Every structure is written in structure tokens, then in C-alpha cells.
Image 1: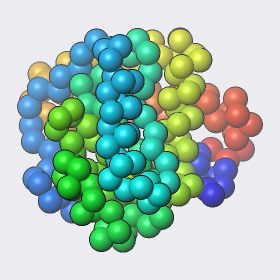
Image 2 (image 1 turned 45 degrees about the vertical axis):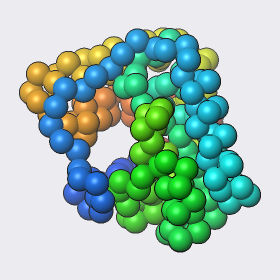
Image 3 (image 1 turned 90 degrees about the vertical axis):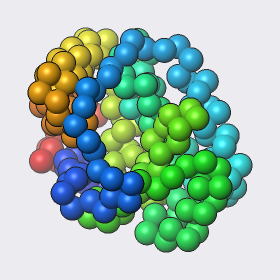
Image 4 (image 1 turned 180 degrees about the vertical axis):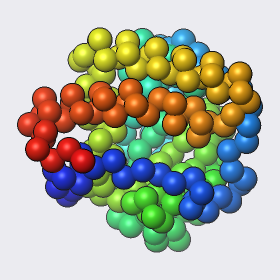
Amino acid sequence: MAGDEQITTHHESNPAAAIWLAGGPTPGPVVVVDHDPAWPATFEQIAERLRTALGPAALAVEHVGSTAVPGLPAKPVVDVDLAVADPADEPAYRGALESAGFTLVVREPQWHEHRCFRGTDPTANVHVFGPGCPETIRHRMFRDWLHRHHTDAARYRDAKLAAAAATSAEIGTVMDYNRRKKPVIHAIYERMFRAAGLGTHIR
């Protein structure tokens, strides 16, 4: 299990170091839509497919990201964190996920051995990490914090809409959109960590 310092440290994904299998992010409009009340049910459908495909190899399946927060606008893509014993051991799970309709699009060995699979019906990003990975812990904490703290949820909503507008106007990529949101995300994380008694570990 990740320790407090690992959880509070911003271990950033580095797209330049990623190994893209289906082409990297391309410039274009970033579409952020109003919250769809059907997203939780959509997640449950995806989760059932993952659990059926992997059986006990699916150690945890979590709905994360903005589609998991009621009222929050989001890109219409359901984000899922999937924990497996060793994400670097692709033969243990890749074939099963691809048979279930999920395509491996990127490997990030330098970022917790993260793999991302894309599903298209419905549209989903399945993020594969190991058990107790600090990133999955952060994702759950952030989701749950926004559920309970409406002021921060509103701040994040405004940051998302502004970032999408600016990125689309400049014909940037999703990575540019993520970069523009980052200051607000980090500020919320800091409040969240301090409230959890982790302030002395913030890096």
C-alpha cells in the first residue's frame, strides 16, 4: 500500500515518454458536456464487462474522474481505474480486455506502469494500475472530496470549462486541456490532503 508521502506527491504522467500504440493525442476541439445522470449506470455496465473478462484478476474496478461526480460537466468518456496484480505483465490481462472490446492505446512504464485501454461502446478509458497504487488512491480521494465539497466542485467545473474553451480556440490537444486545469486541481488536492492530516507530506 502506498505511504502518505507517495500519495501526496504529484507523480505526473509524461506524454513525451509514453509509448503510444494507437497514435498520440491529436489537436482538435475539447468537448465538455453537462453532466449526464446516466454515467453511473454506464460505468456499471463497463465494470461488469471488465469483471466478466478478467474474473479474479480484476482486483478492483472504480469509477473515477468527472463522470463520477454528480453535476460536474465532463468529456463524455467514462474513466475507470482497474487494478491488476502487475500492470507490466500484459499477457495476464491484455488478451481478455481486447476480447471484451477494449483496445490498448498507451503504455507509461515511468508512471506507475500505467496502461490505458479505450472502449468505444460506450466510450471509456480504462486505466490499469497495480494494487495500492498512489494514483488510484488519489483519484478516489479527489472524487469523494468533490462529492462532499460543492465549492471546490464549482471551482473545478469553472476550470474545466475555461480550459476546454481555451484549448479548442487554439486547436490544442487533450494534454493542453489537462495542463490548463492543473493549477486548480493541485490547489484542491492540497486542501484535501491537509484536511486528511497529510499536510506535512505535501510535495
